[in-house]
Image 1 (cartoon, one colour):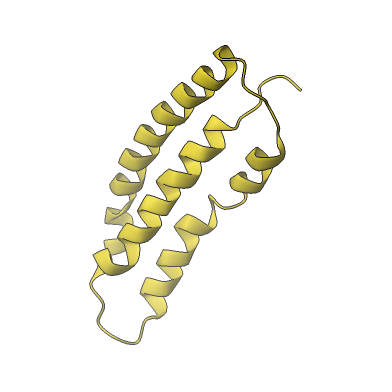
Image 2 (cartoon, rainbow, N blue to C red):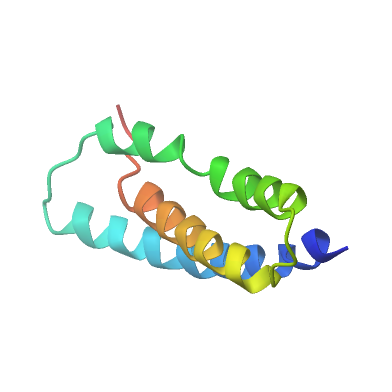
Length: 93
């Protein structure tokens, strides 16, 4: 139940990161910045572990650990990787 109740935190962070990432992308594109798909593809691979690793760590922990100690750093990392991935997204190849 604790794992399921962390999904709203992931959803809220993802929503903020999507908006911020798309704004950064538009500023970069309209400002004449360089585009490269290299970072996008490498950052995209880090999104799924940010959800799976804390669930795994919380469920296998032999000690009583408060969920915020495990989940909050990964939620913030998830938001960071979503924001960076969308800011580096290259629409036209």
